[in-house]
Image (cartoon, rainbow, N blue to C red; front, top):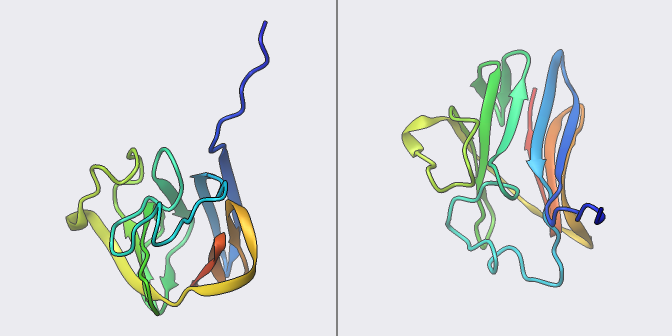
Length: 150
């Protein structure tokens, strides 16, 4: 029997607590593989599924505030719109289970907020999410995108 081939973008999960809410992020984790990601493979100004394969999902066990705006407990499709400068758009969409962003419908957005990405000094080869006590953080290539949550 041949060895099972590893998926190029393996499924991953990040979990943690923010305040009293359990937070779970399910995503597929693509690699940089020497490519230009933001402004290249993922164009600026276009909705991105914030991972690979199925859209990334974020689930909150309790109501939270995201960048100061209320978001009810529930499971959401998580999308980003990368921008060349300053602020990126973070989207929590009411349709969590969808393939990529192909059927993404802005009318189903539960919340949109703007966040400031940061350049990192080192490259994160494989896309990763981290749930910290105060934020949901995406890291990939040489970018870190913190989303403040209370």
